[in-house]
Amino acid sequence: MTTAQQVLDFEGARLGQGGDETWAWYPLPQGTAWCMAFQSMALSSCGIPTKWAWVSACFDTYRSEGRNSYDIRTAQPGDLVAFEWGSTPNGYDHVAMIIALTATGAWTRNGNVNGSKVQDLWFPFDGGGMAEIARPAYATPTPPTPPTPPTHILGDDDMIDRFLARAEGHPEVFLVAPGLGFRWHLTSEERLRSAVHILNSFGGKILRPPASAKVDIIAGQPVWVMNPADLAMIPVAS
Image (tube, rainbow, N blue to C red):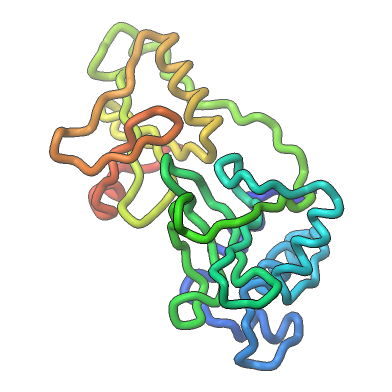
């Protein structure tokens, strides 16, 4: 069964590309608006047959199946989000896929933006045009097991404490162990909350970023927005 992450990975592998692959897949004439066709290609290629080129037709169908919501703040990774900017009479103007939410908006994966490319963009909840979300028929995910602090470092505050970070311009959040020199990718807010709960139960805590740092608040926790090169120096734990 298809998962949201599979579709996001499929789209992520095409970041920076133009519409040629999508136009050929649908098929559509070159130059046709392709944001919805791109989402259709990604979902179909990952095992969820989808064939829409018009955003509103897609959302009409999901709405009839009870798979939609107008509460954007409840969006999950992999949800489709429709945008209403007033440029398409009687229809939505754009569609993207939710990557992750922040305290004030959403990171999205888009086709046909900024020079007809695939790109990740952040939009605010207020004033960003996000009007409706819809959930494709993904497999029900197994709740992830968050990383557990190794038992041999219990009692050593410098080793058990962690901080949360993401790279500037990227939505992915990591749990960083400064004493161990590793980071873990937290793939959802649910996993972030679980990681914090387990960390607290072992006597650890989430460290606050430096006073001069740029900070996001995600799931009630401070997330250090770091220089991508600095974060990349910390290896990802397998």
